[in-house]
Image 1 (cartoon, rainbow, N blue to C red):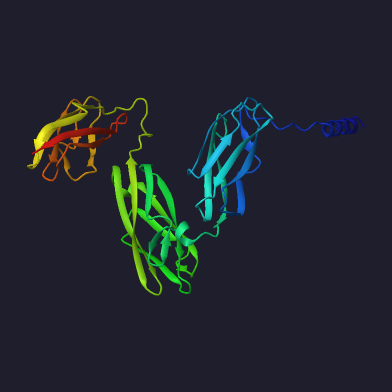
Image 2 (tube, one colour):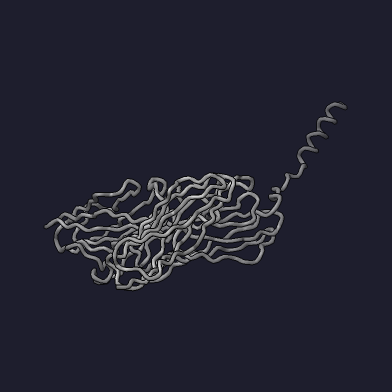
Length: 362
């Protein structure tokens, strides 16, 4: 009997145990109600907005430090004040539909002092229905009956190793002919596709260009091109230019890394008064004051009248290279002000701009 009583008491004590409440994260943390928002189909009529609400599920105040968007068409705003444990905040996102007909899928990255989610990715997506504008207004560039929003894509600064994307809306201005869309002479580091290769009369599509920066095997300013073709009643072709500025990624370097340090003997060269009689040459000395080899990645200029040469591609610590700057004045008739760029693996000063001046006289 005594054993039975003890057993019943044990069962009774187990039945009244209170479940443990969920334990908050040690430190600040955030949890969103949703991390993907679909706008569905929206008109090309200014900005559309949405809000991503989050809760601080930690036990210390949460601070949103910054919020970035994957492109300039998306503008995020956010709660600036610290959010107390258990309280809520918002990330408000506006997407500009003007001039962006077609599908969109954009990423917003939230940076905070969260112990578990210091970065958090949000997504907005949808389809912009183009307004009823004249094709000549919406698609000002024309190759025959194939009209395009633009024929030039500027990718801007790209860290080598990253992949970036740009789009071009296109339109078949034919009244009764389907147009087959194709591409040619596409550089190896570009991936070009179209949302509809069989473009019906009066139809639009999106050309997407992905830039694989590592495969360009280049540094600094770069210009590429490829051709788009539309085959319908007649075959039309047009050139698309692609520009970028490729920057080396130094994020792998640590505080104890041995680094190269570039020191230039001058930041500009002045040829003074020179005749329009051919090449003239001046020199700049580049010294490595660091502890690791200094590599000259590229000597770059945007004008054909300038030419740069170096006697070394790699400069040991304490060593010096001679960079010759040659100015061809044969076709010049007045004062000039050009610049050249020296690109190295110096993480503090990877790009050095050298000003080149001259006054051409008879």
